[in-house]
Image (cartoon, rainbow, N blue to C red; front, side, top):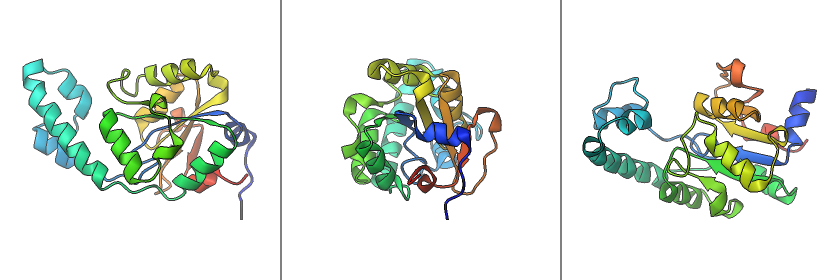
Length: 204
């Protein structure tokens, strides 16, 4: 049975430009960040990309190689989030513009989408990786996509599973949707709509 939607939720579903995070949003999260930090010799609570980015180039270079190797490994294990294919198919049929903003590198993003059979929904130019723009939580990537599409923030939405996705969306003045399959939504200050599964964005 469909739950009645609020006016705000109906407004979000009517928007014509959707930006998705990838890992944990369109795909089931398989990244073991604790293991990655351990392999890289980082503190347990360190932000991986930001910490390595702040290092001198010579020190960071071998760590970037390790990060890329681990991300390729996780890409090979990727599985689509339940409802991802159906949601993207519905949005594509409706003429909605679709984009991805990921903290991965482009080859890993493309491999992940291909592994999950979701690659057909996105033009490569509408996929922004961490080398294409300042990584989330910076709103740069969302601004780039909206400018590329000629889209207004008031007609756009950012969907993600982590705080950085939501902060980027809020900073770009787009609507934010937080997906958490455990029904935990701890960031209400940056979340316009908390969902437990992608099916909640369909069929209304």
